[in-house]
Every structure is written in C-alpha cells, then in structure tokens.
Amino acid sequence: MSHHPAGTGGEVDLAVIGAGINGLAIARDAAARGLRVAVVDRADIGSGTSSTSSRLIHGGLKYLERYDFSLVYESIRERHLLFRTAPHLVRDYPMLIPFYRGNSRPGPLIRLGLLAFDVLALGRGRGLSRRVPLREVARRWPGLSRAGLRGAALFHDAQVPGAERLCVELLLDARRLGARVLTHTTVTGLIVDDGHVRGLRIEDRRTGRREEIRAAVTVNAAGPWIDRVLDGQVESRRLNGGTKGSHVVVDPFPGAPDTCIFFEAAADRRPIFVLPWQGRYVLGSTDLSYDGDLDDVTASDDEIGYLLAETNRIFPDARLTPGDVLYSVAGIRPLPYESGVADNAKISRGHTVLDHAPAYQGLLTVIGGKLTTHRALAEDVTDAALRVLGRRPRRCVTRGRPLPGAETSDWPEFARDFLRHSPLDRARSARLLTLYGVRARRVLDLAAEDPALAETVDKESGALAAEIVMAVREEGAVTLGDIMLRRTLIGLGADMGLSAAPACAAVAVRHLGWDEERARAEVIGYEKELERYRPRALAAPAGGDRRTS
Image (spheres, rainbow, N blue to C red):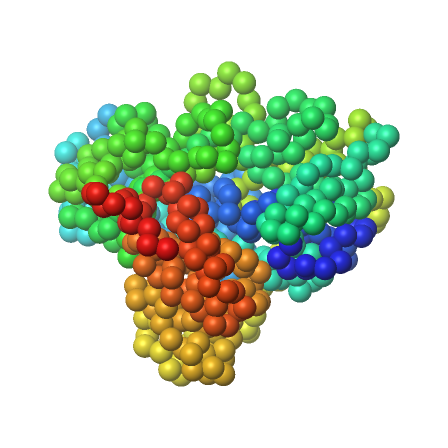
C-alpha cells in the first residue's frame, strides 16, 4: 500500500476501486467536497487504459457524426478547462484532415462538420478551422500523397503528451485534499451485507497484509475490469463492452509531417492518426472487438501491419516496415456493452453512473469515460454519491482548480523565468517544465541539496537522479516501472528506458533504501513489464538473451 503503509483501514465515505484517471479524478472531486475517500488499485496509478490512449484531449469532433451533441459540448468544455488548469501538460494541437477521392466522408461534409464544431466551441478553442488549398498542402506537407487528393482542412484540437503525468497530478491533488490512495493493493472482495455493499476487502500485494475498508458508498471505477469486480458478488448484466485500441511508435520517416494528420483508412474507413509526439510519431489507433484476457493486451502483427500500411499509403516515401516499430501500445477502451453492434465506432464514448440499488445499496459503477472528460465524470460520480449518502449537494470546485503543476498566477511568465534561471541547458529545462510545471523547481531544489542528485541518469531524455527520488518520496512510485513509465517518463523513449534502468535502480539503492538484490529484481521486473509493448530494444540478439542482471 504505497502511500499509506500503516493505518489504511477504517471507515470512509467513499471507497473507489481503480486509480486510473477516472478513479483519481473521483477521489479529487469528492475529497474537495469534504468527503473521506480511499482509492485502491492493484497496480500503479494510470497503468491501465489511462496510459494506452492516443494522448489527445479531443474536443469531440468525431462525435458530431453520431449527432452526440451533448458529448461534443462536454468535451469542448473540458478541453477548455484543461487549457486553463493544466497549461504545462495540455497544448494546442493542429490537425490536417485531407480529403481523398473515394472517402466515405466527402470534403464538403467534413467542412460542414468543422463549421458546426467551431460554432459549438465559440470562445473555447485555440483557433478556427479553415480550408487548406492544395497548393498550401503541397508546400507545408510535401510528403503527403497527392494521388486522389481533393482538398484539406486544418482543425485545432489538443494533446497531453505526458498523459501519465496528468494522473500523477490528480493523485497529488487528491492526497493533498485528504484522499488516501493505495496502489499495488488488490481488492479481494466487496463487503456485502444484507443487500448493502459496505466497503472492500484488500490485500497489499507486496507484504500480503489484509485489511478492510468500510465505506458508506463504494464506487467501481475499474474501467474495462468493472465486470470482474462484480463477478460472483453482485448480480449484474454485462456492463463493459470495451474495444481494443493499438498504436505503434516510430522514429521520423521520409515525408513525416510536422502536424498531426487525421485521415480515413482505406481498409476499413476508420478515421486514424499520424501523431507527432516527443520527436517521434504515434500511428493509431485500431478499434477492434475484444473478449480476450484484459491483463494481457498487446498489439497484434495484423494491427501493426494495418497501421503501417495505411501510413505508407498516404506517405508514399515512408516505406515503414515492422522493423521500424520502436514499440507498440495497446489497451481496452472502457465502453458500455452493446450487443449486435456492427461498427464499434457507433458505441457511445460517453459515461454513465449506474446505481445498483435497491438490490445492492451503496454501490455505484462507472461505465465508459475517456481521457478528456475525466473531470466531468468525477463531478457526476460525486453528485451521485452525495445523493446516496443523503447529503445536501455541495458545490464542485474542480472546474477552476489548477492542478499542482499549474499553481501560479501567470504560467507563461513562470515558464520564461524558469528557463532564464535554470542551471540546466534549455532542452532539459523545457522537459522539466512540461513534465512537472511549477514543481520543476522542486527537482532543481533536490539536485541543489545533494550534488549526486544532479547527475543525469538517462542520456536521451536528460532526466536527473533527483527525479527518481521525487518519484518515490513525493509522487507515490513503488516499483521501477512506476518510476520509469509513469513518473519520469524515461520509459517512453526509443529503447523504453532499458539502457537507463540499471542507473535508475542504482539511484534508488543510494538514496531510497533499496538493496542490491531488490535493484536487480526491479530491473528484471521492469523488463517483464515491458513485454506487452513488444519493444524492439527488448528483442534478444541472435544466440543469446539480452538480460545481464
């Protein structure tokens, strides 16, 4: 139980199962409204679906096609709020939408949709959409195929390059507001008593200690795993109908664009992306029905081939092959279950809060939800919890509450001042700003207090040893994987941090009390965790095993 190793039991108003972005947002919102909250996750924060998305903060353009205007409006509003409350993490992200002969969505229809979107987003966007003449396309995007190209439009959306850090900041704020967040802790069962769900039975996965958390309301926010939480304990119809989304990460390729390209795949008419990200490109995503093991989700060869083929089609000079894939990312979207759906794109991307009463009093299950609207989802869940508790409504404060990394009256001025006075070079200083916001100063403070913490532990990112220490002492990291993949983001580099892992573990030995045996075990465990990404750097060389630990 990473954050509160002692005294984690007792009674709370709200027990939340799942520390993904939705569970953390629920904890933050509920704690901000005065509720006693505990959150439990069997792994790390944001280690499931939250870290496998396209890293886009969608305004909801795609949902216009289904006439889901309420979700479009909600997405636009939440995107706008994130620009204000997390400016270090969320940025404007232009997208070019090319129209090709034979597309199922003709150019005039897309332009009409963009016009409707701009009207809905009036005053809440970062620029109006516009038609892009073919001459400009040829000049600004010369690598884009012009075979059958009829036109294009430029659209402004948003991206959160470090989605994992968004989860970390929700964690920090929830904890500061009084919520308890227990990671690497398994929910072994619900406490069900005479038609009431009265909390959770939990087990610390590292120590084996078992406890109970008594709760007036229990919220099942386990994403794709919501049915598993209920299985054998609560009678319920199938709730999750999540689809599989896979992405691949590649280095820059011939003809690669400097903006996102949002286009229609020839193979299945699905809208997909070529996304510039951290100096590389993410290609994605798929949208496949999935009934396999939720704990073993990897991108298949067919999915990888599909994404490469579609990218090669619109960027003819790219000539990408499976050998160019640095790693892949696959996850399950937490969508509502709908039987007999032929087109997965038609499944709602909205969320609902299911109250299991009267059969099971005190139990709520969150169905659906997405990265962009996590705050709105949390507001809805807390409202529902207050009703179940029989308490008067309490005003939600998260709409205007900045995340910890944005706690400054003038973010642009803070950023300029930090870059001007940082002892690091500009690239490393900029990286700290985009990961930690105003908390970047804390990293530099740690490095100033102990010169050993000013050492660079990863050449590619320029990450400092101080970040390893802060990840564990202040941000709830427990394992090397927590540190590499979901705090420092070293693990999202070209080799997924494999070359830096021993150095990072060594910092933990010197400064965090790990012994050499644990350090070796953590490096091995980290390599094991990376297997689901199919990283090129983990492939064993001919005639031997790459592991040396």
